[in-house]
Amino acid sequence: MWQRIRNWFDPHELRSVGTTPDYRFSLANERTFLAWLRTGLALVGGGLAAAQFLPALPLRHLREAISIALLLLGGTVAVRAIDHWARVERAIRLGKELPASRFPAVLAVVVGLGALLLVVAVLAGALGR
Image (cartoon, rainbow, N blue to C red; front, side, top):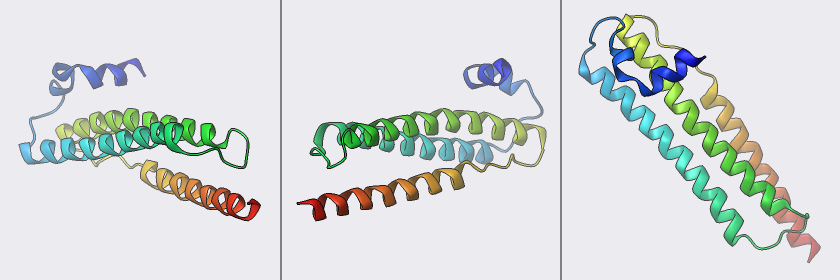
């Protein structure tokens, strides 16, 4: 595990493996990493916005729960992005198959379920008035 984390921050360690790939593949991997990082930042921004701007919801502490969930999800996406970038870069340099990832599917399901829960909360609030 520590070796994996070390690969995140030590470009010399990563470049010492395998052969130098076509730069287009490395740049595509970097663009994918940046897209995931933007997703993480958007989730963090949504969490902060929920904490600051959502009115009190009918269920006690629901606003705080939504905010914390978005903040944690955003942080998880950011950490997962750098780990995936390093694993893909290593695979490219070694000429191996790219590592499979279930994370996009898990993230999509979590966001979808979160949206459904928010719909329920909004409807409960509207019907409770």
